[in-house]
Image 1 (cartoon, rainbow, N blue to C red):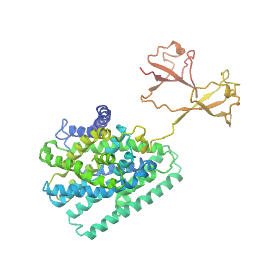
Image 2: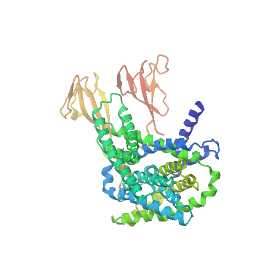
Image 3: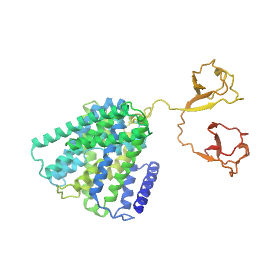
Amino acid sequence: MLTLLALVSIVIVACVLCNKLSNKIGVPVLLAFILLGVAFGSDGIFKIQFENFTLVEQVCTIALIFIMFYGGFGTNWKEAKAVAPQALLLSSAGVVVTAGLVGVFCRYVLRFDWLESLLIGAVLSSTDAASVFSVLRSRQLNLKYKTASLLEVESGSNDPWAYMLTVLILSVMRGESSTPISILITVVWQVLAGAVGGILIAWIGIWAIRHIDFETSGFDTIFVFAIALIAYTFPSLVGGNGYLSTYIVGIVLGNTALPNKRRMVHFFDGATGLMQMMIFFMMGLLAFPSQMPSILLPALAIFLFLTVIARPLAVCPMLAAFRAKISQQLVVSWAGLRGASSIVFAIMVTVDDAYTKNDVFHIVFCVVLLSIGVQGSLLPLVSKKLNMIDNSQDVMKTFNDYTEESSMQFVVLTLEEGHAWVEQQIQDLVLPPQMRIAYIRRGETRVVPRGNTILEKGDHLIMSAMEYRGSRPIAMREVYIDKKHKWVNCQLNELNLLHSRVVLIKRKGDAFAPTGESRILEGDLLVLIKDEN
């Protein structure tokens, strides 16, 4: 158990370090996670023997639930609704067209069986929200014509359709659904149960969040976490499309005014980031590079056909119907990255009872690797060459954790006896730029600050200032002064602090900004800030 925990912690740390490295060298971080998994796998450096596809399929299914949920929850519908018709058309009809074209290619060019050809097409038919979001965020791709929102909605909503196609083809291969009528009934029921279930669960969830008193901080986020699981499981129990329901619940909750929603967005952003690490790492862990030569040429052929022919044929006519620019059509075509969803569906095929002649998992592995490595890396360059970059826009507006208004920070200043502001009118004070006195707490009453308000001893001034948004974080640390500390009874100007300054002293429940003559006493808590070099 301890060995397993140590290994998991090492892997997570390695993934985080890969994230920082990939941003510097311009390689999509998800590719680094795959290669890290390969390094730990059976054919890699560490040679961990792991072939439990059933366990991975269960774990990745849960991970995909939250990736799907956050695909909706993090989407800013105000930005996306203008391009929603195009995006939803691509996520439904576009998936079917892509799957059909890839299936025809595999059948007539690669000579695979018909059902197996269509199965590979279905597994690879959807673009991946995790991959697309990763590139859009990390590379700050500010695209024209609301293209980022279009890609976001498409990649977030097309997984349910690919999942449905994959399940249908597998059922046909097992002999369970063989007539067009039975297939049609299954499709209609999956969509209907998934959509209706998602709307009902979202409505109940909103009501509950607004009416339940979550006494402990963070329990509302845990509650939403549970709603995401319910959104998948309940419709799935009656044969509905759980992923469709999950996405609908996510987008409804994410675009509804809820208490502490910004905190929820940040939580699910981090949680889905961990899920992405896990899926791509496990994919690499399950892969056997020694088996790649036998499927490399078919996989490369499928990738090229999918990227150069199938995706453009599925995208361009549909966007042209909405009078989209040629440059936008080409960028959307190129941005059809494959990733986590294709991996999960490929693992699902591997553990299913349906018989396949070809190694579907490793074929999909190679296609995803090429898609993230080639398409993901070149997407910024392609966008620039097609003149689709518009830096007057902000791609972060498409996400729900973006706030157009500048965030405010509040500080409390207590006017002690002898303070220079006591008995002064507010209009006579010289305040730092962009700092204001928001209100005054005087005893048990609140005083609305006006220009002619006279400040009194003991007033607590609640002052507002702009939140720091610099590119480099501010490093702070706290130092507790006990009776043996070398700074006890010293004045601040007597200390030799290298690259640090004391900005606050907390003493017996009070806090104040010190001066050079301030003396440090036993029991003080000093807040130090590190000066930037």
